[in-house]
Image 1 (cartoon, rainbow, N blue to C red):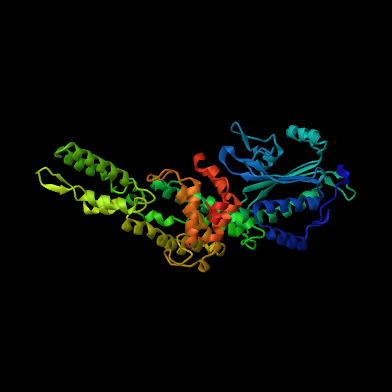
Image 2 (cartoon, rainbow, N blue to C red; image 1 turned 90 degrees about the horizontal axis):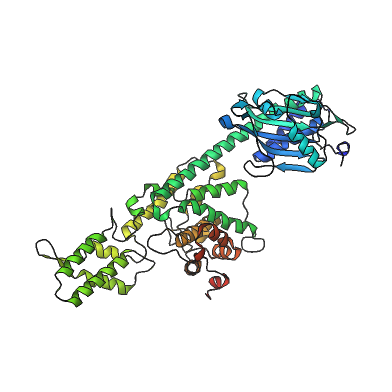
Length: 526
């Protein structure tokens, strides 16, 4: 299509006078746009409609000192069929325009010149302009069989007269579709419109900056929690990934249990915040407990004291068989001290028997090989945490809820405490801290519960167990489903959707992925 054949978009009629009615209508249209990208699209469309411009670009100003730049955000061209939104940092062929080069202001580019001077530039024909370098424009024209001619470039300034963006319009057209220069009336009209547009844009930029600050803050909290314990490192960073993968699967479900489940942008953000903050109460948990990698560990691994006692007992043993038995018992205690997924009654009985043995202290007095506290800790059934330490860790969820319920979340984030505080509840009401049942828990809270357990099972940093293969993790989750611990619908959705495979590729070791078919783990045939 040639420039003269392009169709003018239906916004404000070309050549219309700027009036109070136009202002009112514009403000309504701008206010209806959700998100920065959509708002910048709208601003550019409105400006093109006012002048009949067949193309244009919206640059967002990125304030970064000597690296300050104008980032391509929206590009329109009705002749070439271009209507693109561009995210900075993505290689889409639209590199940002630097405001400074080698420490000097970049006045050779018209957009950067406008950004620096905050003054509009109106050029009748860019091929005749000598003040600015239009080499890039000429290359674009040659590559697309296009002819850039008239150009109007103007700044968008906020209420403090600071640059927040630059808008550039290309090839104004008259009522017959003939390319013409932008008139002084065009420039005055677009500049008036830009003042109102800049107010709306600045408000959204302010909201976005607050959102970015909140995101950075909650992610910093999560990293602090993860750094406090090498054993659960990255847990707080992985739960948002897992939870959002499961939620994505539910949103994609068109004819299953979750066919009616969907999340809008605000609800996605609400879930995102809740997932990042789900363990914020762990900031109050003792590091000695968080970092307990062995059953006998306090400030240090208490097994060294046990080893010394066994050495003393071996030294006074009367026979080689007795010495060998003591060494075997010591190796057994060392093995048990590492923890694991299950401590059998047989193993517990052996610990009790070993504790009846004695060793001679410095005065030759017989002392038990194991203290009552050591027997208690060595007989921990799963992992390395005893009941009292488990209770201390479990308190983190009460603290999490107290912290989150005390924060003045806006209405769009009002369910963050419920989502974050429900990931240790059970479907049968036997969970904690509130003993809620499945019907009392929201779907996102149930999703986070599955995500939390799956991450803990498959984490490759736990000191008391080797990285668990997916087959074992899915078997445990299936049992938990059968015991009405986790939500069965969420479990099946997670497996059948295949979202676990994406997580495994990004966060697990290759040898952990030993799954070909998930169906046996759902039906119980595995």
